[in-house]
Structure formats: C-alpha cells, structure tokens
Length: 417
Image (tube, rainbow, N blue to C red; front, top):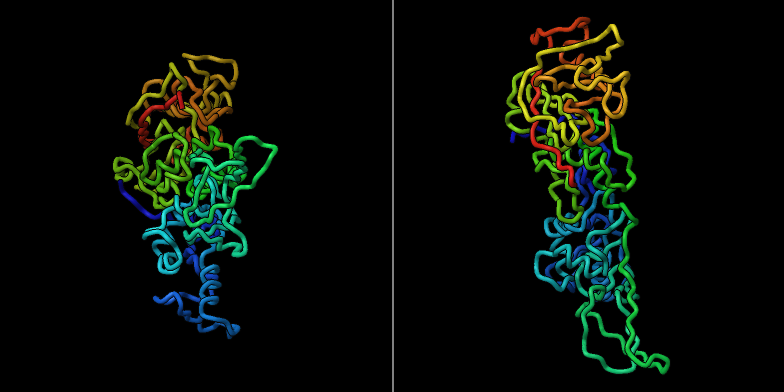
C-alpha cells in the first residue's frame, strides 16, 4: 500500500472535538482538569504551580480528593472504551494505576466492570470511573452501581447469571428478610446503555470526516446502519488501507477503522501515472485518482445479481454523448422508452469493456441495480467527463486519446450481507 496524508484531513478520533473538524487537534490528556498529581508515595501531594492555596487538610484526605478528580473521565464524540484504555496506559497510567487494583495495563473490560456497563455502548457526556479500585470515584459518598439486588430468606449457594457483575472489593449487602416470598428472588437492573444507534453515529461521523473532503455526499447522522452507511464505511476502509468489506463495523473491536486516517491506495492505483478510476465493487463507489492523488469519490450502483459488473482493468474506448436526445442513449440490449429505476436509458455512456460502461442515471441506489454498467448521478457523470477532457465532444467517438482514463474494477458484491 502507498500512503499519503490528504491535504485536508479530519481527525476522526480527536477527543473533545467534533468529528467533522477539518484541522488536526492534539488530544488533551485525561488529567487536564486535575489540579494535583500523585508522587511515588500516595500519601504525598504535589500542587500545580498555578493552583490556589489548598485548604488545610490531612494528607490522607488530600490524596483521596485528588484521586477522585483524576479518576473521572467524560466521554466525548468518537470515544471507545478501548481507545480510552489505550490513552490511560499511554499517558496517565502512573496516576490511574496508583489507585487501581489491577496490573498494568488497564483494560477496557476492567473499566466496563468498574462502571457496571456494557462495553459496547457508551455515550457522549457519560462520566466514567477509570480507576479500577471498587470505589465510586464519581460520587464518593455512594456505592458503585451493581446490576443485581437479592431478596432472600435463606443462605444460598453462589450462582452466576449473565446479568450479574460482582466486584470483589464491593462489600456484600446483608440479605433482607421477608415473609411474603417463600424462596429467593432476584431482581436484575440492566447496566446503563447509550441511546440506540450511538455507536453507529460514531461510524457515520468518522466516514464523513474521511470521505467528504473528496466530494462524497455526507451521511445523515441517524444511527441507522443501512445501505448508505455500509457503502460509506466500506469506501472509508478502501481508501485508508483496510480490508474492503461491507461487513458492519464493530465499535468495540474495529479500532483500526477509527484510527486509520492517512490515505492509502492499492499500489496498482497509486502508481498509475495518469488518470484512473478505481471501483471496489463490494463498496459501490468509484474513486477518481490522478497521479496517486484522489480527485473525487463518487457513489455508484453496479450490476445486479445475474448481470454482475465484471472485474477488468481497461482504458475507455467509446463515448456516446447522444446530444440529439439531451445526452440519453437508449440501450440496444435493454431498451426502454425512458430512464427508470429498473434500467432505462444511459446518460452519455463511456465504454470500457464491451457493453459495460460508466453512465449517468436518475436512480443510483447504494446497491447493485444496473444491468452490468456502473451508474453515476447525472452531476457526477458530467464532472467525470469534464475531468477526462471529453465534455466538449458532440459526436460518438472511438478515439480513446480524447478521453484517456483507465477503469479498474475489483472484487464482487456480497448479496447476502
């Protein structure tokens, strides 16, 4: 893979910044808000130079207050538990580990357990206790949240359920006697969850930050992992050197998706000296590249099942402007009186492999719907013809030197995803 940094590149995982910012911002350390730091001896406290004179207090209470302040982190846009854990271990481990009862490094699973939450769902503005010590550092006067309350009349053997989280340092509550319930009952309180789709919103926001700088239409941030989100996430992977797939991004496991921001194209594309159109069919997109630099990323719709777009690497050989019909050429194989969502006319088709062409269409879904061609929105196709220098052609032309562009299609669309 050849990598280059795009001229304008959004920092998709900048903590404390919106995901659509177009300037790189240094991530603040988790302990920026703290006013004290712990020395090697937890009983010692070193004051910040600009700190106000502290109130007179015992060393033990000063350490406790400082530790609480250091141990609380507020979730911002784009955060994952895994990236929060990584930053703790890289930047703040001396502070957090001084109070944590776990070995280095602190894992995102341990943070999830400390906060009694599902590791896959966190939400913007949520406060997290990042010191794994069995102590409520967010509200010191309250016990840590638990997920199980037990009411019983007898002493029971310990049981394990999927919803139960036990913290070893959490004192067990005394059983509450009752005469109305003859046997043990368990009431489960679910762990706090983010609103539905919050993880998907992070995927949509990061995809926008990578693709929009190349003219790709921005996704609506709605938490819906539909065809357009799959298309954008796949293209984000394709231009950042990741595996090209429409399989849903995991907000917990796919850390590379959110951390890969440098543009990286296949060598065959990056090394091409002229203009090349790269279309990973799985993604339903066309990436226009000139001398290794991305010019535009365009949404496309390729051949439907039974009429799949072929894999090929060929130069354009024929353009049909069809100006006598406002640019619309009626397909001889699949004729139609007018353009329609099923097939219909082809707007100024540019042919590469037999009858398979790139052409404009009124209907360009985020899934294969053509009869083998690659559809573009009308405005996108006009841009493409202007980019290759063919917008002024008025007659049908087989003179490939008038529109020197190569088309590389790769892979196939997985219809069962």
